[in-house]
Image 1: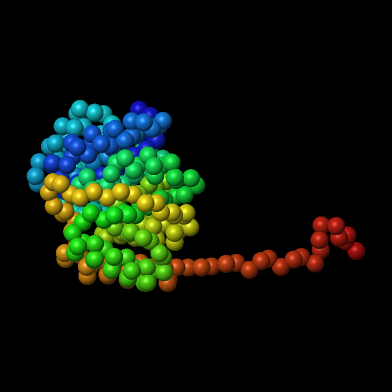
Image 2 (image 1 turned 90 degrees about the vertical axis):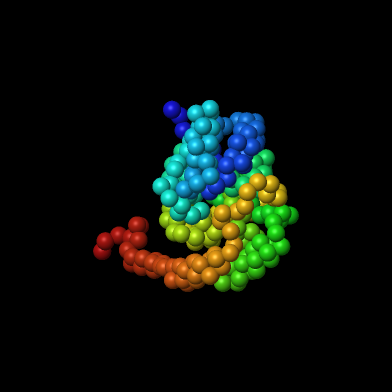
Length: 249
């Protein structure tokens, strides 16, 4: 089987009500592309029947692939598993809660140009006041500590070129810093506005409560990586006294 051109990676934790509508929107959004695609749903130890529904959807359409984590491991782990299981030259990440709009994916693909990562930023956040305030504060602190201005580090909707992902090792929580980590490796990173929709079904499983301290610790780790990155330049070799046109005496 030929590898698809585009892989869409979706981490899932207890999102049963959203999965079929999400697939229908994804299929409609990507149907107009002049390239093949696959959707990789990574079940992060769901307990609400999401795993069984995903397997059913995969039987209905061969463009769906499902990866099951043995137990809940978190969003970074689910994304890492999806990256490793994907086959496309372009890898898209999107949330399973329907707050990201799949119709934005073709727009991001068109805007990739020569970039290695195009990160979406949500123009009009449709979240609770707590999430909006905490996200705004976290982005400001993050930019101050890393010196790398990213408008919306928490937006999952992104497009990567495969070679960039193959150079990155993901640790728990580090998915929020992928733009910074890729820039450290010399990759080209850009940003583009995307839409954001209110959640209709369920509640976020990757929420802000209990994550603040751990995110700050992760931020310090990234700052350490930036500060301690090796920058080694070799001196130019000395010019020989005998050039090409010199003659032996």
